[in-house]
Image (tube, rainbow, N blue to C red; front, top):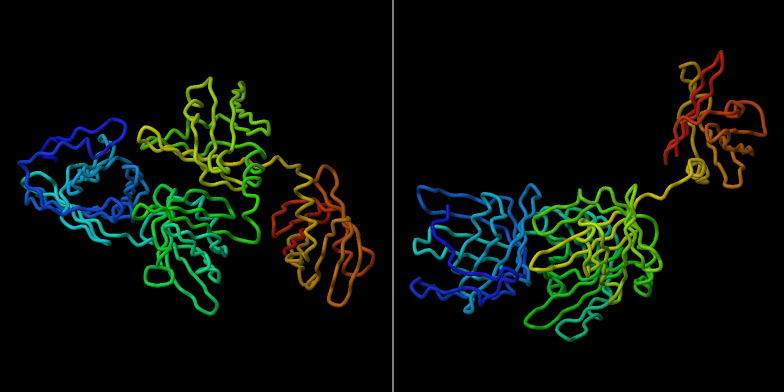
Length: 490
């Protein structure tokens, strides 16, 4: 529906203020905007067209994040993510937004030249530069619980732990001591809770649309106001959150840690995790393009000698990898395959855990993200079963059924502890009976022996293993005359 040709010519690599060609014949309002304000929040977007023939459109569920590198990210309620570029004129009163046509309708209406009408902390209003000025967009700051969670891998590792501030430098001043008694919990549904002795403060948190930021909201609490910003997530592990931001040309830094003495050997921790086991690419996104499926046949290993191996069923490709800059960067280099060459980048390490490696990079004004998921280690079936049996916890009889008749009351109150040394302890009230257990016949059976008589003998014998889970064991016995099922539960 755009009724004019955008007259600014933008660099194909990086959009900058110098690329905007200004037309003196178009009236300008004189309202200016600070680019730091635009990049300070995630914005809720509402679009209006006052033309009676075109009516009104509301971008319900649309959220936009302006990045300091002149890119932006837009996500809708369906979790569809779009990227593009933005720039301000030299006077900062004209805004250009574009995505080379990659944003789908109706959100493509955001691509235009806009005059700034309002520029406040919680409200930005812009109007199309065309003299008719029928199109307007209102940006209001979005509450963290409104924004779709695009970053489950990060949020699942952060939430429900107790974090403390290990380092906080604000514009060159170390104010870590201000928060020495504070602890933070980032709970589900984007709720953040800060405690200081008996005092509890409620706030909010959000990892940003691209998972490379961390928005904290305790604005209403004076002591916590300095941490309430949209931070850049510069480094993240299961134990450490490293955040930075630029404010009024000063760099701020905050590091949160969980547990005790966890920040001492972070690089060693990252190295040991990456080098262990095999990995699959679970996500590879470049700008608006998703190439994740291109890597489904590849298995990756990060060897201790710095060798990166990508293997398919028939072929191996060899490259190299490393962790540098205090393990904040992870360069990958591998050739010989068109798909693999896409991952040859100097990546920034955003997340490393026992099961995930998340890397991002920004090249040629396009964001790339790759996520590796660790494959489960192959385990021996017998070892797996034995680990479930020898929890050294008390398994209670939850069902005892003979020829489909429930006789559980006969074994009511009986509990069994399978010990790691192959012994077992059976208790029935004050009565304790010792015995032995053993996995037999290629893990198909378990033999249970008890030293005693009476009712406990109903548990003794060789049982077929029907099912074993973390909280349940089902054993069966079959003969010509009897069919018995014994269920044990934690």
